[in-house]
Length: 310
Image (cartoon, helix red, strand yellow):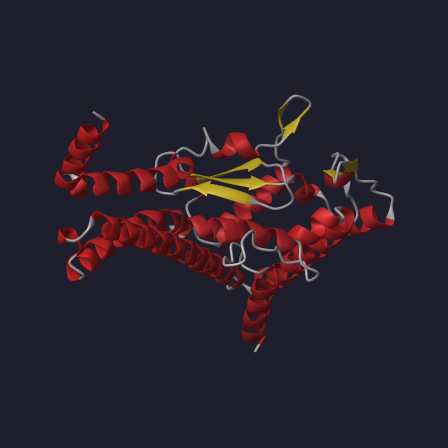
């Protein structure tokens, strides 16, 4: 009974393999884009900042800064909306030309200035199971690392805007279905060339396993390379808006590196597993980049600033 079912399934798969592959690729692409297509119902719910049992509202000053950024980057303001997000730096999702538009989340620490740090100290931050004492040496240092100048805030917001405007979510979402289709097609060609379709089933199974493993590694490498490219492209586009934006970009990444070094110290052993002494984030797996190094991104903007000042 079971053997007959497997034979029927095998015949059905061979008959409809092109349709099944196309459906799988479309499904993967759609799944990866889901929270960009419906950012209000998915992304915003995950990142929204709450205060006193209700969603926090952005201050008028931050709304004004966001509108200035949209004007400086020459995008249609109607396609972008800002909301108060949790965390320490901006987040974004959406596809600007779709009806839902795009959302950019602005964290509460962007409401803080050198003179007034209420946007930071008014929030409870727990690290390593302990609440941060803002008056301790580490708390004062962390408070400083979370306080950005107006130029740094504008760069950080511009970076999110141009990331979405460049169609980066589409490029990122296309990696998985492209690798899946490429792996399947290459696997078919290899088995035809080696004559495995007329050979023992065991050899075909071993070949399938090797091809699947190679396809998975190809996906990891391709996805990390795409992430690296899109991050650098967004940084470059935001930094070239003006010299002030480039200066803000250098400050932004300097303070992110400083913040990560402080978090590494506060989190103890767990912190040494996540953050490098430089402030970069360690990849989760040895063969993956996963995160574009912050030191490289800072150096990229330093070079852009030198070119703008030349």
